[in-house]
Each structure stands twice: as C-alpha cells, then as structure tokens.
Length: 297
Image 1: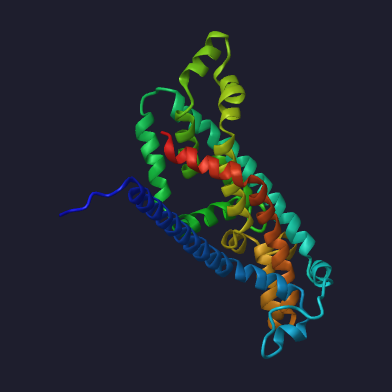
Image 2 (image 1 turned 30 degrees about the vertical axis):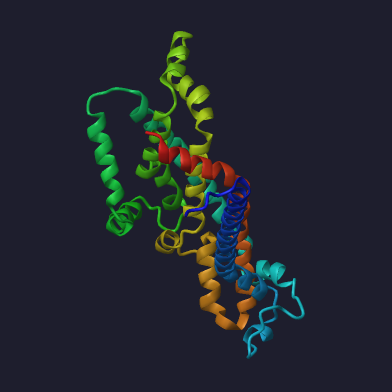
C-alpha cells in the first residue's frame, strides 16, 4: 500500500530542494569569482612587476635571488628617466603625432561613412566593397611603395609620414562609423531637411552628437595605434630629436641594457600611464560604442 504524502512533508521537501539549489548557485558563483580573480592576478602581474622594478635600484634589479618588492623604494627613477635621455622630447613627439592622428582619422572617416550610410548614389555599394577589400592588405605590402613615395616628396626624417596618411581615411573606421550611422533614424534627418538644414549641418548637429560612442571607439583605437606604433617611426625617422616614445625606449634598451634597467622600466611606466588613464575615463563609452556598432547595421 502506497502512503500519500502529507502537506507538511511536501513543504519540507520543497524547502530542502530550494536550499540545495541556492547553495549550488552560491558555489558556482564562488567558483566563477575565484577563477576571474586568479586570471586578473595573472594578467596584471606583468604591470605590477614593471612598476615595482621602476622603483628599485640597479643593484636590486640584478640581485639573485630576485625580490618582487623594492627595498628601499627609489622614487627618483621617474624624474631621472626624463634627464637620462630626452624623454620629454619623445613624449612631446608622441603626443603631437597621436593628437594629429586622432583628429585626422575622425574627420576623414566621418565624412565618407556619412556618404555611404545616408546617400543613394550609383556605384556606392561597389565602392564600399572595394574599400572593405583594402582591409585585407597588410602593412608590409604597402610599406615599400609608401617609403618610395614619401622619399620622393622629401618627407623622410620628418613627422609627416606618421600623421598625414591618417587624414585620408581608414577603411575599418569608415565601416565602423557607417554601421552606427545606419542605426540612427532617418526621420531625424528628414525633419532637419524640412527645416532647411544642409547635409553638412545635419551631420554636424544631429548625426555626430548622436554618434559619440562610435566616435569615442574610433578615437581610442586611433590613439592606441599611434601611441604604441613602433614600426612606422623606425622606418621614417633617423634624428633622435624626432623619436617617439616606443623608438626612444628601444634606444634606451639598446644603449644601456640591464645596466640601467630600472630607468627603462620607469620610462615604460610613464609611457603606459596615458593609455590607462584614457581607458579608465572612456571605459563606459568605449564598451557602449563597441556594443552598438556590433549590433546595428
């Protein structure tokens, strides 16, 4: 004979299962957080090592067994990095190139992206496809023709090859902005047309203010590409007064090696700080822009 469950026993079983599911969720959450914290420590460890090395003396850097924390802490390595090599000149050159690169990229990419997204004209899709195909060309393919061209123009050993090409558009950024522009309702533009606004006025007053997340992504990518670029300055620059920071750091390492490794790490830390600060303040807009440009279009 099968006994019928009483209401009290059913309630007890439901409570036990609910507590068991809650404990299981807590364990899964604890496991996820443990894995994420462990991965975060692994990824941030080289950055912490760089900063702690920048605060050591040269004897501590070469000591065996190596110590992770500096003792005593040598803060003077940071001002010494500016006097040991013309780091201020490198910083000024990198900042100038990065600012011009970001400005040129935004101007030269927003206009064609607006034309591809908003205007219907013959050959638009064909030209857009050809433009996208240029993304497949690696820099090594165009490196020699560009060098010959810039050499003929007398631009070698100047900052012009590092800045001027960015005023002529970038296929990937044009594609990114076009995708975002396509998601903006056309009714806004049509209303502005009825009020007598020109196409450039619509772009400036309506499209660009609504596209701040996408423009922030383009600006951040352009800044990082210019700030971290080592190969292009290496090809075109010979004068030490025109060196950017990546080239200056390579010069420090090749000239002094391990003998002044703490100063090299101090200069490297100063090189990384602007990128970290920029990403910290633009993080929300940057992620928002990546999400929008990935979903729309």
